[in-house]
Image (cartoon, rainbow, N blue to C red; front, side, top):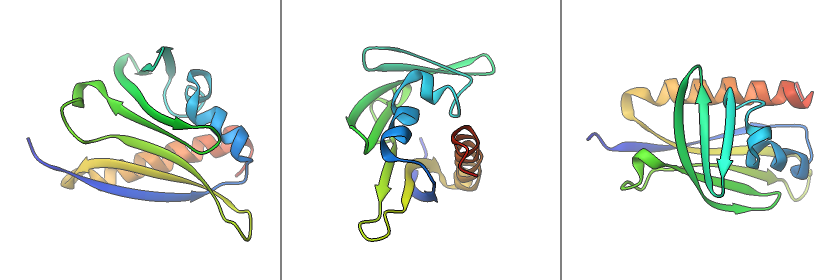
Length: 128
């Protein structure tokens, strides 16, 4: 299997960390922008897109700060995706930091997908 490459992205967003956290950590929040539908049983989240289903385990979370998921079909690998809320100490500007992995020839596609999803999140929040 080809090794995946880690990449990070930053998206400035105008929303409070506590509101943002609801959208990145709950099934109802994630289904507003990340997937068509999201269900959870404990720490296992099921993401549904146009009929296909992927399961991920919520491996860590910190209230108003971050969530980290690991795809269940990738359990034997070190790969994950993490969504962090970062607040600038001085300006109080809020950003969403994305950490994800992709195969080298799919990084641009992965980044474009995140850009589209974060754009959807900003629309849901009215933070365009």
